[in-house]
Amino acid sequence: MLNTIWAVDAFHSNPKVQLRSLRAAEAMAGKKPLQVTPVSVLPWGRFDAESLQFLNKWHDLASVGDARVVKLLKAEKSPALKPHRLLSQEKSSLSQSVTSLIHFAISEKADLIVTSTHARSGPASLVLGSFSESLVYQSPIPVLLVNPKASALKRIKSILFATDFSEASYAAFKKVVQLANPLGAEVILFHKLQFPTVEGLPPLLFSTTPSALRESTQATGQKWIKWSEQQGVKMQLQINTGKADRLKELQKASKKLGNSAVVAMAAQSGALESNLLGSLTQKVIRSISCPVLVIRSEQETLVKKFLSEVIRLGYAYTAQPLIR
Image (cartoon, rainbow, N blue to C red):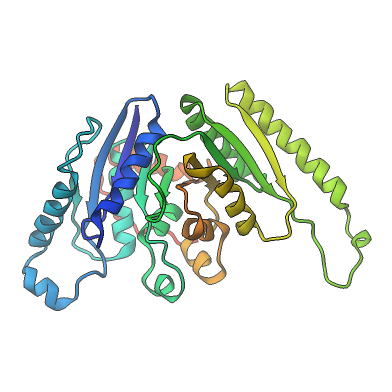
């Protein structure tokens, strides 16, 4: 069974858009049994003092949010849906909202968290932050992000896995292969070949040549393909040598696969670092139209084991997430 937590924004301006996240969860399950728990966290930064005064109490806000989600799900007949859960908290902050959702997902032994993204960019994201992006950087559980502009995902035929062939990427790759197996989906290993160059200096000054770098990358990719095929998953390697940057080349590759594909990758950089410097993960989340699956490395899942043990012992986890 694919146990999924569906993070629902109870106060979304266009609630029906969020149903695409449910469709994506159904597609990720394929023929496997699916269980989806819709979860909302009391919104951060949505209501000013006058609004809160109008609603009088936080539990009134919770009642309104719950009613909105129940109305959204009323027409859904999916047997996979469980009753809506609303997580309340005394401290209203983005980090606390993310922590609350992760805490709940771990306590429910979730395999996947799915949510929609506003695809925010520019100063608004830097100042206000993004719940979905913060969730990606913090969650030890794989997160599937659905762009509100994307077409509804009915079936997953291909998973385009963007990799830099690092150890963290390999750990995420193994998880992607496990998810692809019951779907019968093909995994496409995408790598943008980037040869180190310095303007004004000849290539001979570097320790390797473009052809040698390509051969080395090809050899590594073939090892990954061999492991994937041993797991019964069909796979192909795409070594991209286009002139555009990694993001644009990845966009081109995803568009060629149409509306039955998911882009997957290992999480890169923390929330603060991504805001200051930018990261491929962040850029992909904001610009790729198809659903994006982000997986943390095996080292990061140690956090999941720690939190599970804390919960098992009956303690409440209240520590703020670390920003790397």
